[in-house]
Length: 250
Image 1 (cartoon, rainbow, N blue to C red):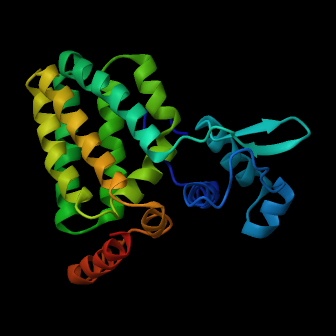
Image 2: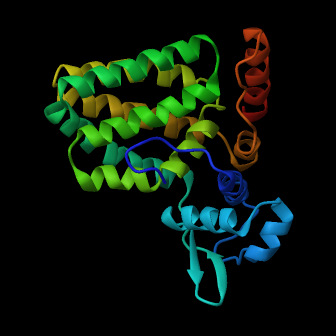
């Protein structure tokens, strides 16, 4: 983890993403034992240090637990995507209210710059860059709340949040809706309107929940595990890639 900042890309993150894909595709079951560190080192071609780092991140998310001398196991109560979104909603709604009350002018200006950069990424159809700034936006609001516990909750699961944001943006219409919500949330915080910020954050996350609920298990597994299109020389190529994924997801 990188306290106080967005996810920093490391070698072990690829293993984290692989395991998360397998969890949410239903290929790993609750309580299942993961392969040994030595086996994952050979299978994924990374150092034992990187494998341990990946396992530590999954442990911080509450998805695995380590038995001393007994191996690493998936938790027996893995949260669903909807469970995670519900937890996010209640934490972020509270953070948004407090951010509107406590944010400094400098912090508000920084949030505005994040939104402007996201809008540029959206126009360029650079969805990878957009997802990274999306996470940065939500973490910034949590820090602006001045509530250490609310901020720590999101910081500790930021890798999971980023993973799910990437996957969510593959679902039809979600990235377009997010791009409409973010400027409105930032505006409410800038105006010191905590109630409006709460309403917008709740509506934003409820919209994401509805997008996931609209898809059955089979369709969700198509969205999970599919990489977001990066910016290319032709914006239409990126749009075509995203449209193909969304057709599979829908």
